[in-house]
Length: 201
Ligand SMILES: NC(=O)c1ccc[n+]([C@@H]2O[C@H](COP(=O)([O-])OP(=O)(O)OC[C@H]3O[C@@H](n4cnc5c(N)ncnc54)[C@H](OP(=O)(O)O)[C@@H]3O)[C@@H](O)[C@H]2O)c1
Image (cartoon, rainbow, N blue to C red; front, side, top):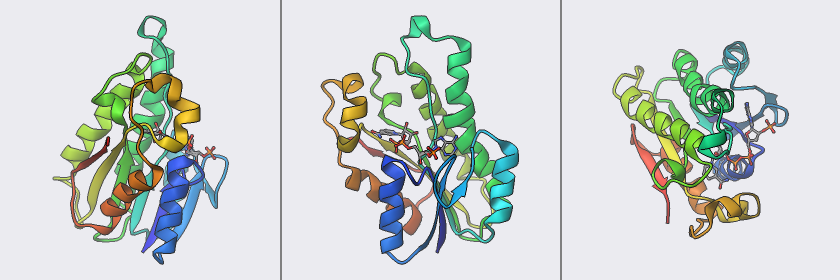
């Protein structure tokens, strides 16, 4: 399969792209400033150009999308807009535009995160985006044409990211990057659709 991994230079994306490549797939590694191809998912024009520049994709995996981590009392509407524009709409727009470009029987795999189910301080904005992604995926799956599938991976905090995020997730038992990456492989290689794979333990 020809597969684009958006966020392919990040912690999750690197592992997913490497696993897919080792399975023999043709992987296009995408970042906003890094990778084989540069795409900022907050730009509709760049998403359209991305699909035109990378025709005949069989799968799109998104492991990208940012959000502000702030206490609710300090979370301004402008801070919240980052999660809306990036993690929520950025990923959803990859689907809304990409559904018209992907090969028949293709798939989308998006990313949310544990905060939508197990809240942490500073996490409201990311949780909002995560919940939106999970609901969008469930609903979109029943309408996608051309036998396209869509799933979401919701990782717990990842062991390999604990140096970056550990202070936010005190008391959480992290999961391995390899286990999280397997959920993306299951989504791409399997037949299921409309699922959120919760990799929490
Ligand atoms: N790591 C964890 O423990 C964990 C747990 C649960 C959920 N998640 C979620 O999983 C996703 C990926 O996490 P990660 O830890 O792998 O992130 P990461 O290491 O920070 O990597 C982010 C990746 O996304 C790309 N990227 C960033 N902004 C982009 C944009 N606007 N358009 C396109 N690409 C963009 C980056 O490339 P450039 O630098 O070139 O832009 C990079 O390849 C995030 O949404 C995160 O919330 C992570």
